Image (cartoon, rainbow, N blue to C red; front, top):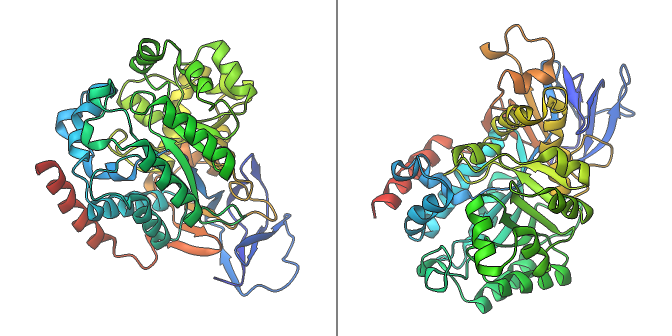
Length: 450
């Protein structure tokens, strides 16, 4: 932990809402203690001064939907041209062969890619617990700690197998009592509700087509009792809507309400196929939506109605989704695609770089139920992503903040988490990335060839 650091005279600074003019940010004990006015100096001497005159400073980016293990099945030939349901049914048998070692490698690669893109806090939705994978979330906790990042790790679940009318194969589903016992264990062991927490736990039954209503209901009860968040996939495709109508006699939001999930604890991945009345209900209850534009384009699922949702009171954030449907874990790449996809629907003046970067920072914090991150303000955690504009892609650019998205920034020069530099000169501190990637590639080949 560094003592007192002055990130001095940044080229540009975005505070989570707007671009601000500042003489820098002072950090002490992992928190922001001063945001200086132009020409203002720190109130007392600093141990370290970092010259940020060539850097655009953002709050650390926050990823609100991912599946770390899917880095092992990126761009896999048999599913390159499939939509969601066939894509899932083809991949489930491959994913069912996941091992603890492969999960560790897949998670570390996902986290490293996120960190290099300026992401300081991520969520993950892990719902695969075949035999031998009972400690999957524990493995992820270890990987997150190794990278020095923050994470909300969602204890996912699948309990509705093919024999009962669900989508997943039987070897990937678990009994309700096993799911609930492990969920309780993980909350009690790892969940930290305090400001500055590095690990949070959420409960995340996978989707309407892979879990029973009973698991949804019991998860909602546990989340209320333990004061943790709820997460699931919802309204990603029209196939899902048809499934809900045929199995439950309900549209997706009606189903959500029927199992006790229509409330402020809930954040939903994708949230594409809502009608106006459903959007109003989601907004009224303060439900959050993780917009995953690249995955939604890759699988041709549709376009999230972000403006209507936001206007109604819903919270919007960004998620990279799994690396088998993106096929990247890069938050800046995701933000750029969000800017362009949403402009197709709402126009250039409505969807600005500031709006999208707000989704990626402040919106992400709200989605995960956190008030201590996602903004550059006094008292917030010292999580930052710093980008330079020295690459050829930025040559001739004029507005530094807009250039990050319009010119396609992909890799941060420096990243700070909790007052500690985790990326320096574009490289992760104390990580042999080359060795990690060699092991990861071997594991990926082995998984699909078993």
